[in-house]
Length: 323
Image (cartoon, rainbow, N blue to C red):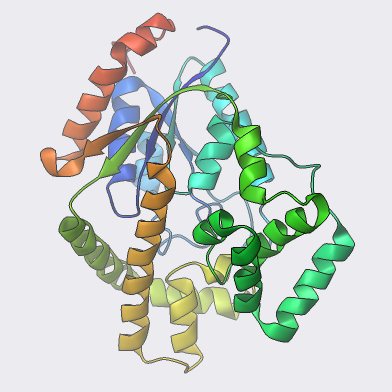
């Protein structure tokens, strides 16, 4: 195997079929999956994050799943470090890294390596911003971010205090919007990667989202949320702001009916899918695959495998490997 890893990435909005296609692709190409999902890193958050099942993990090794407790701060820089180590290890063992997930920031951090860990840090300013959030609310800080860095504000959720504070901290320290700093650092690729984005008609995606939420409820998402709350993981944690957990926590606390919580989960997931597509559509390296054109995830995976065969052969990676 050559020294420089090749990576195939499967990205796109939630419920578009990334996990199923990634699994089929990894099986076909003797690969291992590296998750690019900001919530699958947390232990005990299984149903609401749609983690691979134990049976699927037995078929194909999965990395960057269950690497942090729900009350841990898990940064993009930490993800970049762990995912990079996973990619290097997978390739060194003669297997193919298959990056699968919908967290665009994680995908960009791994493939393009644009992070800037030592720039724009000031603990005093960060503490003041966090104090301000307690006084006037997170939404007010998001409004401030929108005024100085509309691009960052458009992709950061209005309740994501940690990332809002980080963006404002960078701007106050450096005078440069965090979105511009990320653009400058993006440069070339950290890894030679082929990126495939999964898409489908809006009507089909909405149906899949609604069906998926209903399935998660049947699988026991509410009980999962109750267990996390009972273990002391409160709503102030970044992990517990994840879609599904936040809304069901509100139901458990009597702040919403079950019907209201379910509808909020579905609406929130649809909005999240739209934000994901906005993020990925900016990346001209992504080749888009319309899942409406394929009867099964295996068919889509077969197309991706064929599309990358020559590219992989040039790297000395034989597609006709035996498992």
